Length: 89
Image 1 (tube, rainbow, N blue to C red):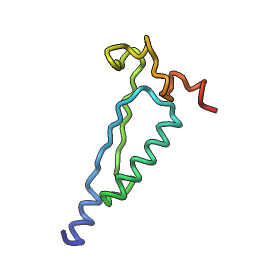
Image 2: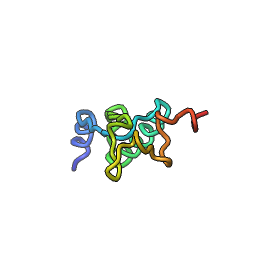
Image 3: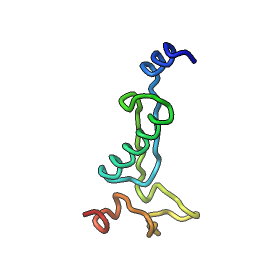
Image 4: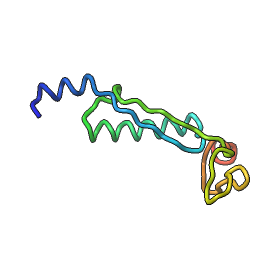
């Protein structure tokens, strides 16, 4: 690819990253966004300000693991919005 085409692609390409997870805190989202967007930018050469990120956070009653609603059996390993008061300081 010639350099001129690279410059054109970097100005018009706007990749998107979509994260589906149990609802995260704003602090968690900021950390995840920085890491994912930085990596995407490094790998693709697309400037960070051209990369979009969307979070789809789900309540515990909207997530099933092993056939059981997470609201009935919250994952003990998870750090998320539902238990932020236990781990966030």
